[in-house]
Image 1: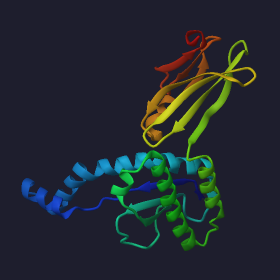
Image 2: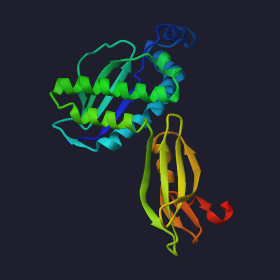
Image 3: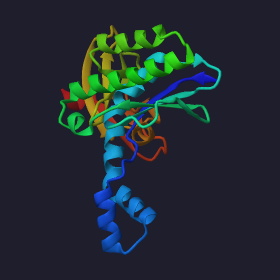
Image 4: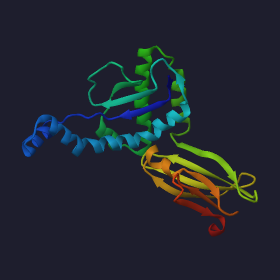
Length: 245
């Protein structure tokens, strides 16, 4: 088994006052009321937290690659107000560890502060798990240091650079995974590598399931225009050197 995935989660915390209120209003049982409370209040918080932290956890995954393990393919850090279980839980290869966290404090932080906090939460969970499993923490700390050196900017080139039909230019897709969005850029460069045109063509939710569909094929449709075609081959965005002049 190979460890290759990292993520943060915000487990549901039952609000007894809300649940009691729902029970009275809906005339329902406790289990139904907690389900209603989760759907009305918590699910949106959980979704937002996962989206806002995914830029750093995904960056950690990309830089880490994979590591052979006995029984763990993913580390999931449960961010909780109060730690209720100090154990490392292994659920079908997902190693779950609880780390103390305050959502209200996190919510008011700037984008950069949220990135720093995300990395710290992830490393706190990793260090707790590493100690439990007697792993070497060095590879994990090296990735954390690399993320800090890169200024917490999760940016990469998707697939390969492609040349224009007459070989005068080349083009590439640049992906920038931020706290609030995934921004996809098209870049055209001269044959010497000098960038002559860069445009943001797509801004999507910062989640792989949301933005992956846009990444189908990069293709020159003339010697001056390059297009990014989606996975379904029925939509595209493009930039044109002639129109940019």
